[in-house]
Length: 368
Image (cartoon, rainbow, N blue to C red; front, side, top):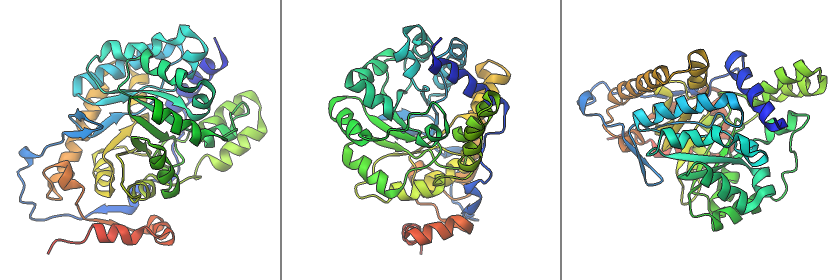
């Protein structure tokens, strides 16, 4: 077993069993304005949405979680069963372990075997894209017959890992090369630190097809490193995890607004603290096109390795979203993008300082 594979199962267990969610939920600063006369039949509300040319029955994707260790095969199998049953998309975890050892490929391939018609995206970190190049990206796509590939940015986690890859030079150039060479859509995703306007603009200019904001607000992989550091007696990494793991980054709410503000905006996936259908509704109203979650589904699978519980939870989120849409007078996802929102607290203060709050106000002008 290579070191990457060992680390994958350690991180998975930590996320399922330990406290790894950040201390503040940015969605509490966002309020959807109640519409007392919605003039909508709740039974006619439509949750279907389009993303990168694919149709989803819910505006929800099962975000990247795992793969690369024998014990993760069954988890990916169950998650893929849920995705196929509900008509939603799914991403696999980083496929680095499979590039380092072919014996780990099956833990990823099982996803396509179980969900032959679902939207599935491959996944590789920016440093590995730089290392393995176009050939490596083509290999991870082929491995699962992926519909798209995500290049993840996790330098916050890497910075607190003793074995982390902390050479970020040349990553943007590598992303540009992949966008030019690969025929599949390229998604760039953060993993808990969020994406700012400036970075989103660079990614757009590089040719990426979509951005997953991966904002501060949900699971902190940097915080997960605290537990690994404790087990290994690494006091410095434990200290760094505690210092940076709980509140460093750009929140999901801020990231959605900043990424949607770039000229010629591209599709946005909101991940980072999406825990229910109201969070989905708020994200869509702020400018997201799709929402992803990982930890809520992972915990269900780790408790009982079966698809039923994941299916039930996604259906519940769909009903929660439907109620939120009904109470804001929205019949479709396009309507929801025009729903009126109020932003308060620290989120508003930050957005005002950075010059994005006025944009939200202009976009959400009340109907006459």
